[in-house]
Amino acid sequence: MPAPRRRSHRLARWLLLCVSFGVTLAVVEIGFRIHAWVGDENLRVAFENLDRPRLPRTGAVDLAHFARRSSNPRILFEMVPNLTGVTFKNVAVTTDSHGFRGPERPVEKPANGLRIVGIGDSVMFGWGVPEPDTVLRRLETRLRAEFPTRQVDVINTAVPGYNTAMEVEVLVEKGLRFAPDLVIIDYCGNDTDLPNLLPRKRSYWTLRKSYLYDFVQLACQGRKDPWRQGQFDNAPMAANQRRLEHDPDRVPPEYAWMVGWQGWRAAMARLADLSRQHRFRVLVTAHWEVPKEVRQCCTDLGLPLFCATSHLLAWMKQNGVEVKDYTTSALTLAPDDPHPTALSCGLQSEGLWEFLQHSGLLRDLTTAR
Figure: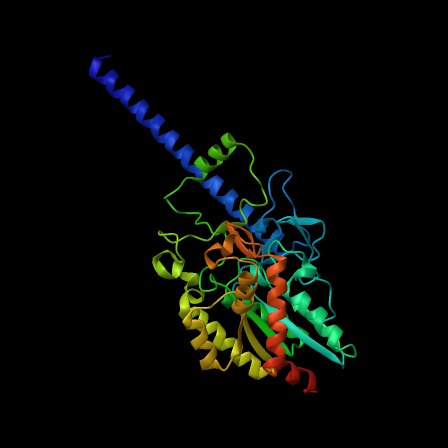
């Protein structure tokens, strides 16, 4: 056989081999993509019906370990109900059958009942604070002592990582069934931002990544925490580490409605409308001073606002703590974790009690029958 014909046959065989290899890789890649889609669907269903957490054998427990996806696309995630035996930030965390932190309360309000529902995020939840020391539970204890003939229940629906839009949605989905007389919504500095966790969404037909490569890479790295992996993604941060309201291009389009002052004001306006429809009062609280946008919105909507700033500053002055040293004082958990301590919650609770009395809100709640 002439040399040119032999070279032509070898080239044809190599081309056939390359095409066959490429087709095989493509078929395997498609198989891994289908496998990922089926796995994600099974995981989604499992998490939506989850009634107990799966905690890691080693390492720290974080929010994603005792959260599950919400069937409500406007809530995104919620705490697993009936939690017991979970230690988070060095304190025990238990939840009732609704996924709320604290003891179980009957849904139906008794004839002599006084109901307060709290909606908020990590501060109201009591991040790193024992449940009896949280602001809402202290308030309930005080109210029960003051009105022994009334059945006072304070329900804490707060979940770490929420924003205001999600908090109002939780009130609609879960809180209104308790027929609240008062709804306390706690403002925090990240309430205009994305929530901490976003349900993981993957494009199974994108050409920008290889599912086969991801599988091989994961196999080489060893098994990771299966609870954390696959359920949630951490919310993206702004390029300058500031809130995403300053970097709107990084906000996923499906969540743009809940971000920024526009999203926050819309949620607050909805809360005010709900209060008129369902005949409950609203109180806005904050553990530190709030931006001018918050004060203006509360004024526009006719919502009372309580800030615990003066009570915290009074304690700091009495104990010789400068304002610049706030995050290193006994009022916060740690220099890198500015969440309020039990001491700070106690000061806030005292201030809240005084505000309820002096504003006349407590009188209105306890006499309106």
